Image (tube, rainbow, N blue to C red; front, top):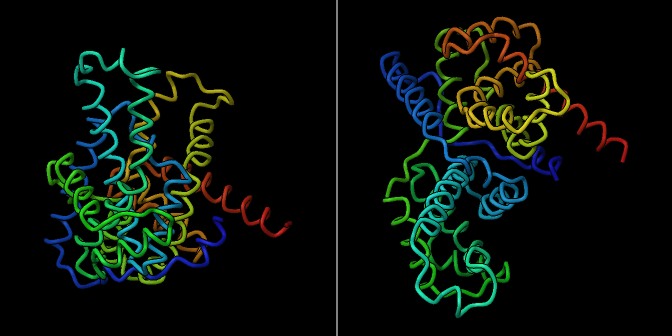
Length: 311
């Protein structure tokens, strides 16, 4: 399935390079860096749990089928995770209704998850629909299209149900939908890179970065497991090491520079050291960290390509 995505990923229309002023780029970068640090400082124990390969794949398939900009898929994935974490935290910190445990068979938590499982596909679609409405360069999914699409997927819903689901997501997220996503980091970093190093072909890199980022998100668990083992020099990292490593797996700035480094290696290896050096200068992330991320990701790309070729 990863091979299909690598072939079918469409060009993002959400970003034009070499048009932003240095002052604007500086503000963007400072803001992204702050938001990234704030996110890492406030991580939930469930952070990353709702970026499972099958879920991300499902979101990408929806955006592909509806011909949406790739940015919408990444934004929707962030909304889904934020909604699920907040929703579950609220459910399990709210006192259990008196008699609920006695009147219903099974564990209360099991009942909560069963109820959530039933409406989860609609929650995911609502996040995609909301993300499409926030994109200035994208077709908005109207309710007629939404109902028709969900029916084709085997989910019979009315426009009213769709509106209620959207409102539920909005309220749970306190109407705070404008959150950075991995593609935003990649595009801003590319713009800054192109401004600082005019010889770097950021337009060509951007097209390749879309494929690399999509692959990385779909293979996130495998890639970061390999990175953890490389970092700790341990084939079986402890639970404590894995818990501490969450700040790495959720670091969008590291992901952004890593994706660009991988794309550069594939596109023009002769510029590899120049680009890695500049990315390190821009973000403060060490060259070693960028190189380690790129090496592990390239290893998984090679393995996947070899596996597909052999079959």
